[in-house]
Length: 108
Image 1 (cartoon, one colour):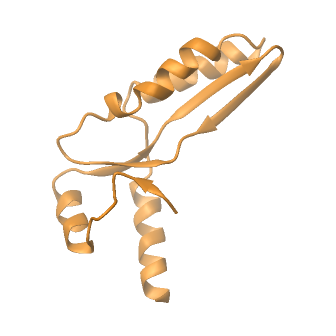
Image 2 (tube, rainbow, N blue to C red):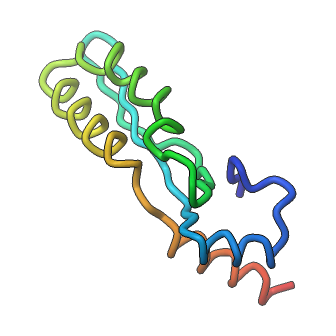
């Protein structure tokens, strides 16, 4: 599993960051090609306590704004969903990621 922003962080550093408000998030984006609309989630991002999660997901928000609207009927619906989620800081998947990391660590 590839988590952007977690490179070089040790387990102790991760625990300290999480205590200081860090979280793992994913962003939604959509794009349309004629009558087809695709809704996807980004890779997981590690957002440190002082970082702005909305800014980190800005690329996905812009992608949806530019290319999401064009498929009818789902393009506008998925675009609004993506904008709403991303402008709230993305989907918090911290619990799922920590459970996965604990599971991986216990198998080692």
